[in-house]
Figure 1 (tube, one colour):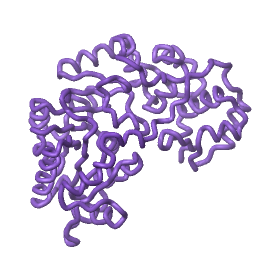
Figure 2 (cartoon, helix red, strand yellow):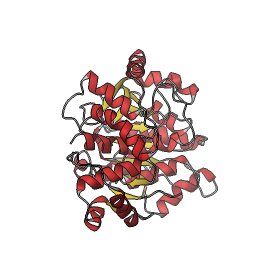
Figure 3 (cartoon, rainbow, N blue to C red):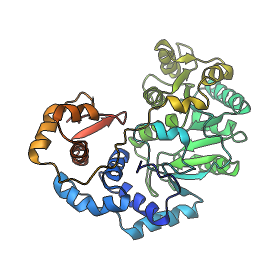
Figure 4 (cartoon, rainbow, N blue to C red):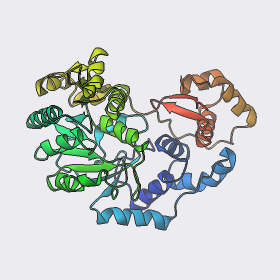
Length: 373
């Protein structure tokens, strides 16, 4: 498929992928739609002016010089851009909805990227929670598992430090040069010095904002066979990570805590809802052993239509027909083709245009719905 190259991208292809992905209003799903429609990032960039006129939204890619500067800047940090489908791209991440077409990565050459466990929890963790995180992570590392977390204060920090010698992956919410919190910059260096990995989907210079942390969390869960919630309040980023893990067909684990501690409310609630109760690393290994590492065969890849003929653009009647079938309830694209009588090529183009103008949203990479206003 066009979005999953069989080998390394050439330098020119990598620059084109970067320019297309860094274009305003183009995210991972739209990027894949463009590549499948036009066959390459270069051709998609050439088509952007016409698409901009049809969608009514600006679609101006950064200059070639700006893309070259970003790649040069990354190299100064010892980082590199890895494209989906290249050998270094994390294998489990390929199977999540809206997987990043490009990742910025450093380190990790010797890690086992298929035996991975994400461990997350409260930033203001209790002393007992921090100790549990360290013991659990160290035990998992001794059993051959690579830890994944978000480099935040509290539980994340304890997880990374406990697995420096056995392998850990830190997922950043901002650019490679904007590590947050700044107090964990030395920890980031320690991770790389010990053979671990840092990665992000955000560009250089990107200061993490509140909405960037859930995006980061989907990568933490997407990189992992399962997610362990050590401590979490009733409303917390850790519970968002657990929800995303379930959507990605990952296992969710939680450590029970005292009903008197607000930091245990989230984990206890997850257990009531069916999460695996954890008292030791053995509880996690027993579950993941059935899915590790061949579990990838259970995952559904992102919806990626084949490259289709460049037919004449669909007319207004076809667009109206499609809009009449769409609602806030997600529906499969194949079902829309059947009900509308439109060709697959016309449907692909119309969904692309509606995506570019912000009218639709994709659910699970396979279902489409009208975006809520």
